[in-house]
Image 1: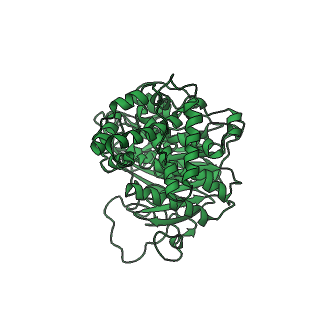
Image 2 (image 1 turned 90 degrees about the vertical axis):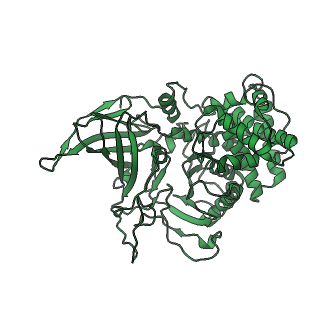
Image 3 (image 1 turned 135 degrees about the vertical axis):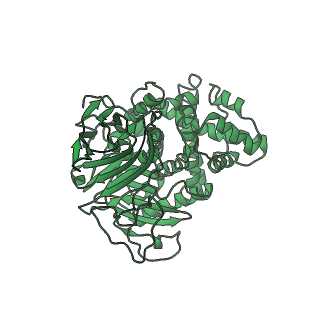
Length: 557
């Protein structure tokens, strides 16, 4: 394709504001990689990828046209790293329908996600045969001349080109071939109409090869359950191949029909009336689909299914990994009182990012899915002592970042700072980390990356976090500063109100009172005032949006 690769955040900002942002630059100092403790290295960079929350597609203002979308994903060529996607568009079509490229990394045929081979057709009312429609490539995707059709079928392929191991951009590794199949993020796969209103969306899978499939959308593709027992125990967990089965992973598009007998399994198509039913285009984009040589294990925790999946063998068992994920999830569910989505899926894959500037652990959160990429030699001790911080941070974003939507860069300090601070506190509450060790880790990170940073006094924490796509020093300063700001705000509010850990109640208040509106500074201040009766505006002006150094960190745990 002629269009240069473009990041999700670049496309998001360009669509929303017309602004331009620089490319994602990962920390490349080899000395930092060697000297810093591994949990800190992973947390500084890997958890910074909540920016994927910003990849949600937003339609342009409707122009009097409204459509329904029905997608089908064909997995026949998935073992070769190729998806064939068909979308049926029905409704009031404009004379020319623009279908935008996905919001992820695309356009580099040798090293990225590459949609290609588009065709379009519409039913011919005279002879019943489909007639081809003209398709032209645009700077942002493809345009179909609809020729007054009321419905059309658009088909394209997506190649997930293998990345080069020395490529430092972690986005290159989200949608990629894996053992026996592929891993694909929704924001890099689904083309969607632009400039029209979208009413209804469905997604179906075609799986003629009966590949093991994991679809961590808000509908679980379940494995076979073995054993019984308490719902919050490993004895209830299925340790089996995840699979696509009739009625086992899809939410009905309408009321579920009554059945007198179990549905039959047809691996080639989703049965009539059953399909994944995204609420909107954001829901469509916030998804991960994985197929191939995968194993899945799940356990019920409160009102949520917690799922662990992997496509390789590690130096620990699936049951041990699921137990760690379960303990983290149970603690966070207990903190908020309910799940932001079900299931919550943690996918553990191999870290293929190599080179002097690479990190040992990477984490990505999208929708209700958490992708953690780790060294294949990872041990159980390293899983608990290092990878756990990434899992906890990214899982926390299911509440703060997804359920409480993050779109405004000026509040990234709060979203990332709180997720970093609370991730460590959740690990302590779960008994995975000891309190003294956790306190020392957090204090060390704040001291090194915030108080000793050359940016202190020259750049506010909010400014650094808003430009977190910049460089390594700014990334570390932003996250350590954001964490210190949350801990400092909590301590100050406690002194002013007499409430212990008032920021805990503020977060729960934001979650319980959420209405789908993006998180804003005003919303944070209002929640603080509602919970504590304290006006925190001047404190934020001084220490977060201003350049006054934060007070010494106290009460970190």
